[in-house]
Image 1 (cartoon, rainbow, N blue to C red):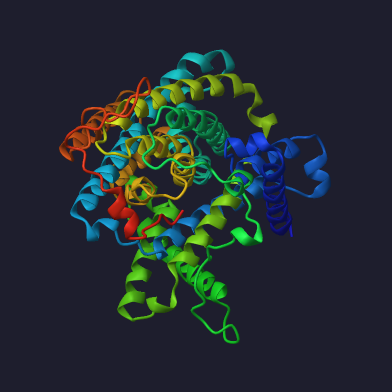
Image 2 (image 1 turned 60 degrees about the vertical axis):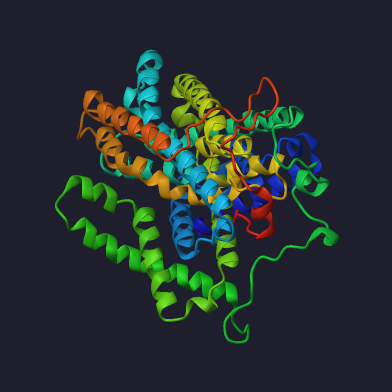
Length: 481
């Protein structure tokens, strides 16, 4: 019953977020998602003495729900086929899309390597006065670069291994601060770019987008296709059944992996979401081979991914126990500000140098992804490109292929947090080397050019910039987000 109560209150806070976004104009103006608004209300609600206990809400249960939905979201992503690139009808578009995806993915990987080093030394500097071990700074990439799901998952894994107490609480708090950075910095940056004419396809945001809900006459998009006869099985039940199948298979595959007597393999094997994603890819391949994929709709599957993401974001906020981490809040805030400033400088330098007409849109997407989640990045892109006419939003999906090398260090971060490996200097050297490799690869892939725009002036189009946004738009390709 406690699971259902926690789940229901997370849903209630989501509805509260929708209402506040619809009726409080400033929230709509900064495009704050209902999940973040509801999450902020939820964390206040959960930390009023006696309220959560009276209503039967357990913050630990919220944490477990976050972890569960995180796994489900990755399984759902794995079951969703990657849309064909718009560039299949235009060589220029394919080339630019590849370059944009590679550049953004490798930049993400570089920050995933550099931010734990910055975080570690910040907590070492600021945390001493508050008895906060420097190792808590290593958790920052799980939050800023990955979001609340990974924060909860990796934090719980570290605690279960006898590592840092309250690791999940600290990491989730980092992710909450990251979400606030994403929109409080990202939206003003987007509006500054609009004023300076940096957007490729600027349009005034519609009132519907600002308030976050559509009136009947504005409800033109569909959530997916009906691929099954409802008298037999509801189409949503069919898709959720596939998610359940993958989840159970994941548990068995995970057990096989954990039988391998190696600490690093065990660290990767312990990431249920990681294993689930690859099992889902395998199941998707089997569905195609057996010609069953024709009964599976990717648009509907993407809605399942979006639903789990909304719930896990609110749940992450509600899982925070201020009483548990309150003594460390000052060094945590200081560290997040330093890492946020470092990330922003990184994004503002490399974003204009990716080499394309939509580099400003890419900059916004990258900032959102490096402080929140991929959907946060797409939300910021929509501020300047409401109809997703540029390739930037589509690149946010395909950039995942280039992000993988950076996550190679996850196991070593966890080992350092549980005391099985020295973070300084062993893991720090690995971070710096792999981070520099990511930066070098950006140059190799041709995604480190002369600036295509400047926040101080107008847009500057270099001779080698060949983005073909019109050809991309004609194909009708759109992001799944």
